[in-house]
Length: 407
Ligand SMILES: *Cc1c(COP(=O)(O)O)cnc(C)c1O
Image (cartoon, rainbow, N blue to C red; front, side, top):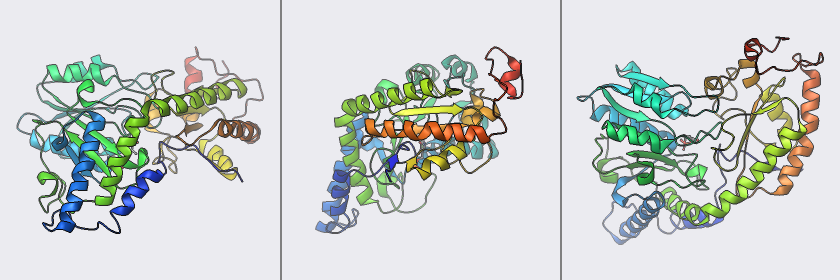
């Protein structure tokens, strides 16, 4: 059976060039970078070269990069580190309603510790209004954390406009750039951010490696691990050398291939969206129509459960996801879709298709061939089926909250 992977926002395969580079640091160059002998020194050089590659790919200086175990750790480290280092200045943290759980749950944990939290709402496309951030800032605000691009709906946030505001108020600004990095230009000075998160396994490096950018001069305190003095006292523990080398390589490849890859996956994505919306009825695109990352298509199919679609697609060899990988399996629809004002029953029919460098036109053909009968079959079985020619009226308030509204 044909197998088609359309879930690159969940994870990507490791590129062959990246795996080859890694391999050298598993078998032959196995030294501990802290060791003073030649085995150690060799590996130390590789780690520092990887740091240069990561730094260059986001316009940072090498000593502003800390290697971590991934996006989740970087987000935790950024938020905890700023919160605890700036307690004497204030206790107020601002975030958005559509963040990844690595940010939301970290901020919530700080809320339990006594920090005050403001969650900025989003519009129907999932966009944060910078004026809302400006209005939320108080004398006590120490941190704003708002993601660059959303994992579930692909929406790109106005990070530059937000950073102008945080700068004016002298507030530290962190962004989770896990989904944008490698797909659109990410430069810490252009964006104006003080901390930035990236993750290896979303850019064709392995799982379990990531980095945190911390702008020089940012008040931040190591607070997660107690241990050795690795990473200039910012992250204790023997370095994940093979992962670090892989991340460095993946960053370089991502920068080199950025334009051609973005063009390729945007073209496929545009065709996918066009075909889905013109050949299947009762489908809405979720997220922003244009301000979205390349390769990212997300929809709500009315009168169908997202999970049923996923299972049916999986039986045909197609990998997709509904909402985010972390929320699938739970019955609650995604917090991202709900915060965009999408009614519960519509949000239940969400599906995300995220394309990568190996996807082809034939993959889109195959998806359409398989998807149309799946939708027909599931809708015929659905208790929510619209046999009575029910059509959702976008002007009707009752329709927005209940699929049984017949207005
Ligand atoms: C995947 C993801 C993370 C988590 O990264 P891990 O390396 O899997 O811990 C954080 N934020 C966003 C936006 C993501 O998509």
